[in-house]
Length: 365
Image (spheres, rainbow, N blue to C red):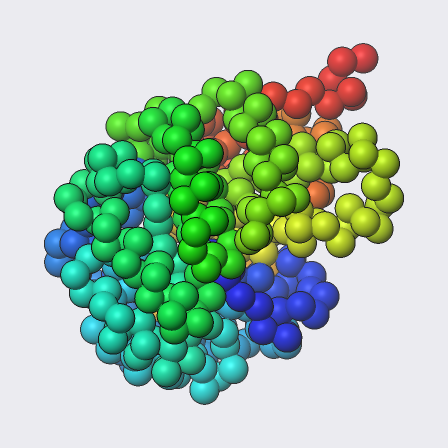
């Protein structure tokens, strides 16, 4: 999630040195039972979560990346279930770190809570909407009434002028409904729509991902609507959309500079472990939430040092280290494939992303 950007976030940065986003899984506690939950969230907090003092120490580590600082994305579970949530937000803001949050749509997500989040300096809200109707959305989220609560929260964020990102699952179960979801979102004040292409880990193993051919056709549709949508349209765990967008823009006769300035161009080079780093509720440092390779722990390692120097991170920073099609693809620096999906499919985060069907010319000779 990256609903908003501070001025510092627009400065050029080397993603091998400083990530764009730090995701903190504040807790695994959550009142929902989502069918695709990576964290396999539970009703109560898991043992060993970072304490308040450890959380504050971790936030100070983020400041060690220097200027421009990453954006901090508070996730879970449900971050509203995290004790000391507001003191931790205050600590981040005092350090100059921009904060966004992805709360679960439970009865705890009230207008008053959203207003309090804004008062404490939260810059953006991320909500999940996995269907255009209650039947589909609630079947994914596992709790009746979640669809209606999500729409109400969307109205409140508009009233409070809180930048809103909507995250939508892309799987065989939701793909046919995406156009209807898009039409529904146009009725709300949305800053960004992020389509998350399923990674079958955690509870997500019960859902069916799209085939590479189906994904390619859907990405063409995403590109078509992105030019007319009243909000930014992006993909998560589907960086091959950048390749699709570049190919389409080149066919339209756009120049390299125009492509670089496009909406798709804003995400060029960002991928799991390169521009993104994830910290679990117990402090484990991973390249991404869906790439559970533990490279360190903020309790005894420095986040910036792990991100810059740990062996897997160094490989993920360098697209020349990728294998198979991704290793020889001319788009590997701009796209690089989903390292999480490669890991889930093969056990090797450097292998090719099976969602992408593109065959580089170098492999057809």
